[in-house]
Image (cartoon, rainbow, N blue to C red; front, side, top):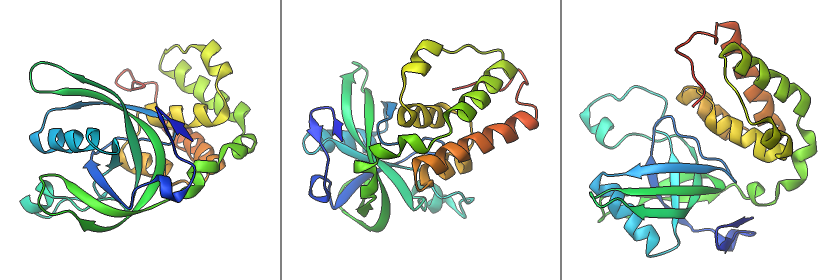
Length: 225
């Protein structure tokens, strides 16, 4: 996989440890783009370190449980699976913030926490290497069914899509882009992230969308993010 100016094709191309950015409701998938507005000092320090090194950041949701106390809020337990992103766009705002974009490289499993001595968190990771060489599974997706459900969602919410771009997109790009832009909650986002392959992710996306439609997704408060 080529991301920005880097090529990731084998285990040695990925780090043993990753800086981890906990972000509720965020979903980054391989090949996807996640824009971020960075303003907290600890995460500004994280991005400074990444920009001076391998440009890689791990996006992970906090665990899908209620925090027990203030310490859990400040340093939450994290979900087991996240996604490494490479910083492929970066700008300073002039008021102390960074506007950045991460391009998804590879999912990973969290192992143990390391890296005391800096304000952000780092973990040893086990990359899911199948993400680096999964281009041959595009044909496993039921594209017609996926587009049918997508169109039904748009119609229910009176939304439009750039159908020319949709038709040009490959199945991997289509499934991962729709998964990332979907208005689902943290549990659904994590299920999409942890789907073992593209076929399962597409099926999960279809199932969740159909549940949303059955519950009345045409309400005016529901929008596609």
